[in-house]
Image (tube, rainbow over all chains, first blue to last red):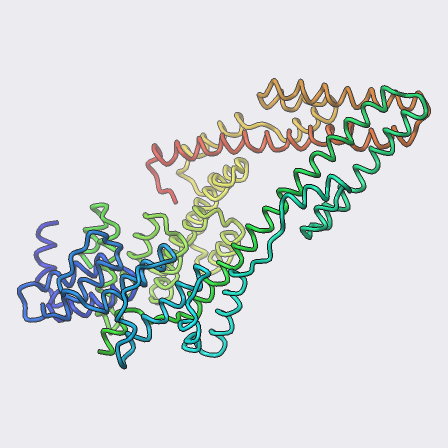
Length: 266
Length: 249
């Protein structure tokens, strides 16, 4: 193993230039930790310059290294990269004022777009930022405005109201939450057992009347509880749907350039 | 490539993957394409990334004209399909491959045997393993699994004749008593309603009480026996994973 490792290290594949190229390839293909190793191995060579240090820092951010100490010092690109990573991991990031207001280049625009996306996801965005949603293009901005609308004014159903409706009339709560199949089933079952209970009591079969009453009550209790759950599920699914649409848009359209792309542009 | 292979041999699958990737990245003439794809597929397979591994094995099969190397890559794909329990795809792929590699029928029979072991189909597994030859240990294991397994047909017939008895057969004792009690109660309700000539009551009671529990008894028996057989299958697979020395998926 040692001999093989030694011989391999002498191979041209491990020359500094090739390690640099391969490091970038690894970073692009999602192997940030390994990419960092490649760039670090350039230490002591002429290739270990400010760009390589910046790439090492980018790799650290991509690899999710929380205790990172930047080699390349304070750099707006690293703020962007860290913000983007935090946004993708937690859905939010710590905005650093000043970066987005720089003149020209891809970075300020990308940072502003990141802020807009993060604000829309949280459902709260300043008017002046909202006015810049056009940066996402026609379809992108339309989608984002619709998504924001769903967050600000969600289509929610009240669990309490659903429960009360079902208590008054079996199945009504389910109709309110759009669960029509269950609504019909609740109405039919509670109706049949209720009818049988009454009919047995009237015809002088109190024992059967009690049994059917118990079943009817059991079904109706389940129907009320089910209506409350149905409203809660409706609300949860609506929120999940909005989040999923947002994530689908984010990963499909890729509105933010990868930090490495910005480095390459620069 | 030797470096990547040695890392793989040491169990450093991720490092081996990266070194194979390096080789591929600089191999503009694609002279090591097959080995590199194959090794990356093996590394991903070892780390449980079956879907990605399958893609690399497919690329490995496409990147060579050598029949032996192609076969090696195809077997890699078949093994992954077994591990993923994609049995239909396995059957289709192996049927096509058997036409391309007719001389490898014993190897195909061997992996088909494994495919049926993973599906818990002991008779079929045995049938293929006999054709494969040199798989006596696996055949003996299939025999013992068959003996330990519960018969779904027998369990269902028992539960149909006496509710709960199929569950007792599958080794459960409290639930069958409750099942039997509910079915008995439902039967009594129906009989009582018929006696009083309240046929609509009897119909509703039969449908929502008696048959509901009777059907539940059958469906529970089915699930229980399936679960028990799955446990037996998993025990056997665990045993094979830890103790079997021959080739395995």
